[in-house]
Length: 498
View 1: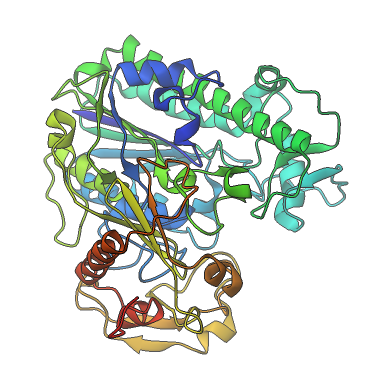
View 2: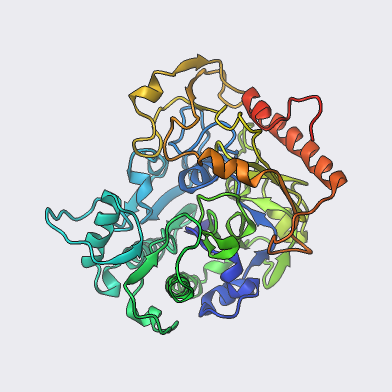
């Protein structure tokens, strides 16, 4: 048996044809839906990039205990377990965060790995002198400058990171299609911002905009003109269409080598992206509306052969590690909370009633697939938060010597295998991991019925539903051995919870 995971970053469910969107050119996503099971109720767990990938390895929530960071010593890594059980694992990626501070050791869990250079601020090509062209948005730091240097070296489509990355993945498929017992993770940074795509894809979405470049929105409230907004949205669509083209090459390889008969195929993403919905851009922005948290998922299981069907059961990113281990008949670690999706694929059998999701230090969110409840910290307690780590790496420059001065030894949790952890103060002192206090508190607690109100425009004032969701939230936090201060900051240890 074999398995291929094609993972995109920031791929919007609500902008794909299999989920009802028609104003985009994405025929291969439609083709994929015809050959697989489409999941209608898949949610993120921990966000953003590296927290989501830790969940992909461990099948366990990241965000209740720490923010962005590497795998810890006690973590059970899905690709490492596969490798230890005789399944050859190979990672191809252009997701440059794997190779910077705060990523560091994920790629080392695979037998082999390849990195296609040049995405976003990847410190790839060196230019001492460089004039960044006029543009709207983007980053104003060295990362932003590097992005425009990298673009200069990717002037033709064949030079772009996504093309090199898929070429590496397709080479692995071509050279190993007749072998058995392997897992390929073909992970693509796109359509993550900036939305940099060749003219042939941009020409599919013409507009009348003639101003300076705008394909890299920041994470903030919308303040651009309607013409600028639509232009940037068109750039995202162009990049999705490019992703679709290269997804099609994987499907072609599946056809060419008849891999459908013995190869599990998973196509997924880590989270979505706000493109002016709720008057916001980005993903690291509060609150986590469904445009960010409700994500696409497609799975073909050759043992079940379910295709061109949909499943409504509530599933999450944490289930993918369990699904892959189960497919290869490998044991699931005791600490893994994700569930194999075999029976969900077969007959839409539920694996959970509720799902938690969020980012460390922000709202703690819960959904039952119909309702989404976002629990905000109590005023004055928003920075009552800690990071529990064994390897004190995080988002670049987030953990510095001043943060390390707050370090205490903590006995650990039920998943740290009896080993202690370092407790670091994780309020406003840890840069890059938190939202400003005013963003958290201005939102407050929020409850939506996403079946009757999929756009989450109207708060649901149903006290009975809120109490039910709150009870489930507390129970799941307990199941995941959440730190005591999480309850306190959310007002869940008060006698008179409102």
